[in-house]
Image (cartoon, rainbow, N blue to C red; front, side, top):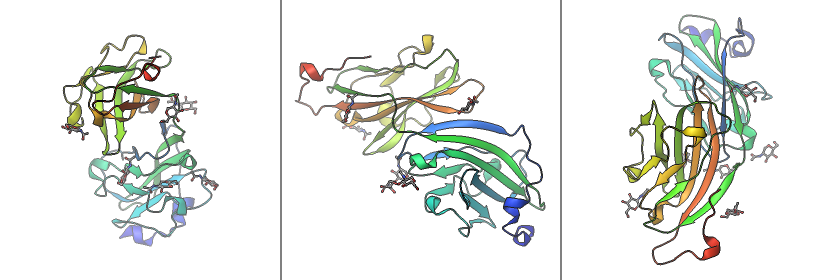
Length: 263
Ligand SMILES: *[C@@H]1O[C@H](CO)[C@@H](O)[C@H](O)[C@H]1NC(C)=O
Ligand SMILES: *[C@@H]1O[C@H](CO)[C@@H](O)[C@H](O)[C@H]1NC(C)=O
Ligand SMILES: *[C@@H]1O[C@H](CO)[C@@H](O)[C@H](O)[C@H]1NC(C)=O
Ligand SMILES: *[C@@H]1O[C@H](CO)[C@@H](O)[C@H](O)[C@H]1NC(C)=O
Ligand SMILES: *[C@@H]1O[C@H](CO)[C@@H](O)[C@H](O)[C@H]1NC(C)=O
Ligand SMILES: *[C@@H]1O[C@H](CO)[C@@H](O)[C@H](O)[C@H]1NC(C)=O
């Protein structure tokens, strides 16, 4: 077991060469969210150990995984009980980090590093610039059951989008409302209660318009909807807008001043 013989210090001192071309991605998220930070080992070589660090963090790891388990020894206290590998088997070289209950203090530069089995070298695989910001650009919309509505969202600039998703957070949990990529709706991870009720208003996304059409509203559609985009040629996931949708209980109707003004 080579990894056992490597002193912990080595993780901070032994990085042989840090390539300037290590790819960096930006991810933005909101406080309270759970997210995954993507990282995949090249090739399919088995890893002896993986660590996630934050370069601007005084001391300690975000997560150190070796000998088949999380090593809590030198973990920074602010990450205790909030992080895990998405797949501890590291199948297909996936060493995605799951980070729960984000706070604005989690903003920082994260690095994913790996030590291959039988090797002493520790290689930097990826750097992620995570920004946790309070809900920006949030609007409130109130509607009645049975209505069809449009949740407005427009991408800034004119960069082509590779993928767009609408995500919801309710008291009942969270999940995809709609994921649009490769020119079509991906039904894979869609929350069943939205099947056949949602679409993009314009699948061409002309002028960056990725507004969502939601039909036959139900009271339990109430929740926070988030419109997120991934631009072509990039892995960055950018939160564009949050919409606080309230669907009134049956029988209660909108008064005029409550009626939404779509921006
Ligand atoms: C990531 O964000 C930085 C600024 O925070 C920006 O300069 C850089 O271009 C962004 N990278 C990508 C790939 O969008
Ligand atoms: C985050 O994960 C925890 C535990 O897995 C879960 O209880 C919680 O609801 C999740 N939070 C969000 C906002 O999805
Ligand atoms: C999430 O973090 C906030 C603030 O740090 C805390 O008040 C809350 O209890 C945490 N929620 C969970 C589910 O751990
Ligand atoms: C962020 O860190 C500061 C200083 O350590 C602390 O006072 C504050 O409560 C933290 N905020 C959150 C949301 O955890
Ligand atoms: C949206 O509703 C919340 C309360 O649910 C309120 O605090 C906030 O000011 C409202 N925002 C707008 C833009 O009306
Ligand atoms: C909302 O209610 C409908 C019918 O009452 C039910 O079929 C659906 O699963 C519910 N949606 C969620 C997200 O619980």
